[in-house]
Length: 86
Image 1 (cartoon, helix red, strand yellow):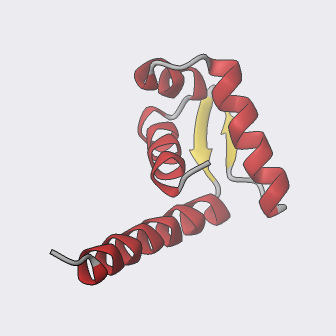
Image 2 (spheres, rainbow, N blue to C red; image 1 turned 135 degrees about the horizontal axis):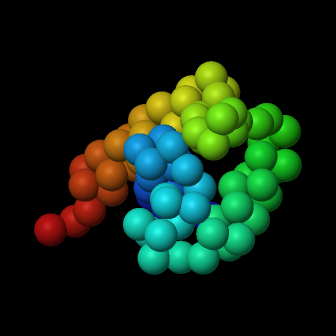
């Protein structure tokens, strides 16, 4: 999955505090979003979110991961801008 998509998906989960509501807002199926996040968690070997009392929150590791994804995305955009020949 591309970095901007990862950022958007994690931000939506954080915003809506629900995988179901995040999926609805993203116009994708909830099982699809859940599967993507689970695959990412397996790849990273960390839990990105936790659900308690019907509320889904990013874990500390999930928040840090999102922070670093944003940093990487910003650096990549800067790099592309600076190396592009006009």
